[in-house]
Length: 266
Ligand SMILES: [Zn+2]
Image (cartoon, rainbow, N blue to C red; front, side):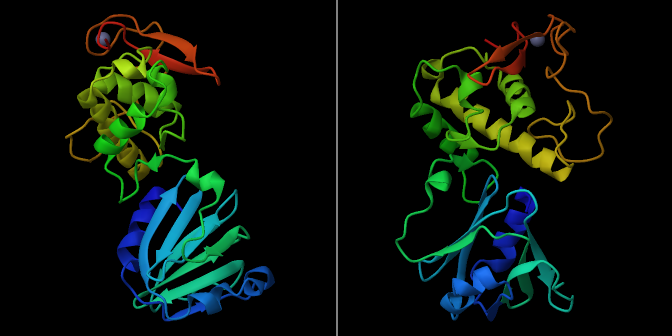
């Protein structure tokens, strides 16, 4: 499920009673997941990377990890729920949430801790429950203050969602030098980085993961003239704002290339 679907998921499922839960998949049936969910009501849905969490009013949490081939589909009433590859069906008034090709699904009992692989992930910038500005500022305050900003924001344990393109483009639009130490950021700067990254991610989600210079905070979505970036992939080319040549260099343990304008980002 994409982030956009996770938001839809929350919208159509949250607050609704489960009318029916079923599985024909032996390994799901063996865990008695449908029976244990009987009579429960969905509280919220959340995506963190490939992890999806469906929280129920009982305190139970359905955790699925989609790996490569798994997918959650939302099927409105009146449309058939395709049986092929169906691992779990959850019907609420108006909709059925159908999980396909995903053996990695567990139902946690109330109070049972989330798997370490989920706990380690930072707040998902696109989750409905996340405040991108405040949560990013808080997450960056918890980082090693000497860590470089461009390294920290790509660490999915700090915040989840920012990849290499979004790192460079967001920090350019925020006017923050990727090589600065996290501890040198003001709360306002840290919040701005989070808010801008989240806005770009949302726009990217709407357009299949691509962003361009057309995307900037406050600009209404609409047709976009090109896939041009502000700085990403533009080493040596003039900055679109000030004309200074764009620089690039590998950053962090993974040595992911960061692009930046040394004049616009300070
Ligand atoms: Zn510039």
